[in-house]
Length: 180
Image (cartoon, rainbow, N blue to C red; front, top):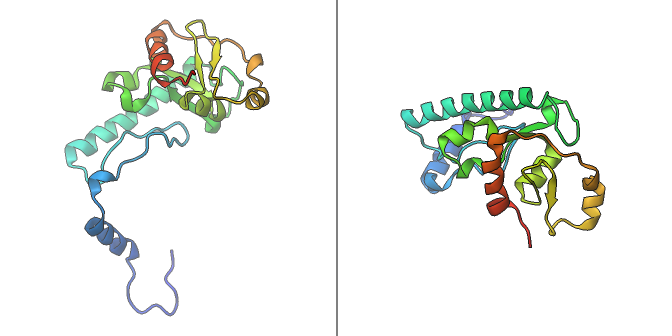
């Protein structure tokens, strides 16, 4: 970013903002919202001020997330099993049991994942759909009939799931799925 031609001093505005935030905001209250996912990379809940051990953990976790995503892309043939979308920018390595509720091992377990297109991922993360052990979809009554039709949910195929996914799907159905 360039400075205005008439600017005399200042520069480093970002540094001043950071100092102001540090003085006025409790850094412990600043965490990433794990429901905000971009391109399939969900971040763990972390605070702004991290020590070296925590930073190393985050670096390792991010590497693990890349491996998690890669294994799902390979396992699902590079496409969403529902929509058939193959553009990797539109595919999300979705955790069946949400990241924030997982142990470290569960976070990186490929059986805890499904490669989904963005819309399907959002429906799944919001608990508006879930999958049965046989790969068929169940739809929450909270999803309006008009939206069900727009998404053509009644035409969705059953998806092939790993046997190890069953425990995570049971969790999703019991805890995340919004059935009424």
